[in-house]
Length: 290
Image 1: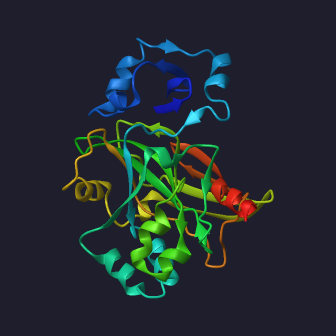
Image 2: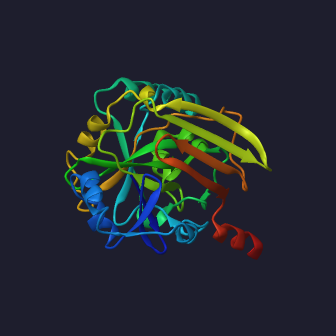
């Protein structure tokens, strides 16, 4: 099943049919047994006509599948991520190598809901960064009891030049306006997402393919329950939270994002999220004023 948060309300997709779900997003998703609860609603909720599906899911109507939750992220959970971060770092390459093999995972705060972009929306690159990349990540929705209830696609935008200068600059490299994207839906299943699910990313520039690669969820080093266990060990999340599980695909060191680039991330069972790259408009206004 797939849950869409839209400007018109909440939409449930099941076996190619769509249903309107009344209520508040946080109250709906923050429960144990979410899949069973949604299945129990199927005979009680209104089915959307084929004509109305277009209106509900038209361009610009789909919101990121987040309410009052925070977004957190795990780092160096894939070998490719470890190698990339060692390569970018001028001062702390061995730090990432140690984290990859350590008992405790790297976890960091990524975003509040107001800074999160959704499907077909813009994500930003920092004006003060010279090397920027998207980071496609399978993202967990974890309820307030610490139990995984759904999955979505995440884009953990990263300023590699800033983090590479000094590992202590990680918050500046990772946390800024529209530095995170989630979407297009929350995938809810009775069983965990298959570990052989493919994760794919394509970056287009001026209508041409600039980068393309893919991998599978199975390449991750740590289990999802391990990551969520550490996250919930000393923090309470009353509405649940989202956890990006780590970067699995990394463009080469010669590549950096530019305004107008289009990032397309696909994960089996969930779907595809598309974002366009730009910079914060306030910088353009300031530049014109100067």
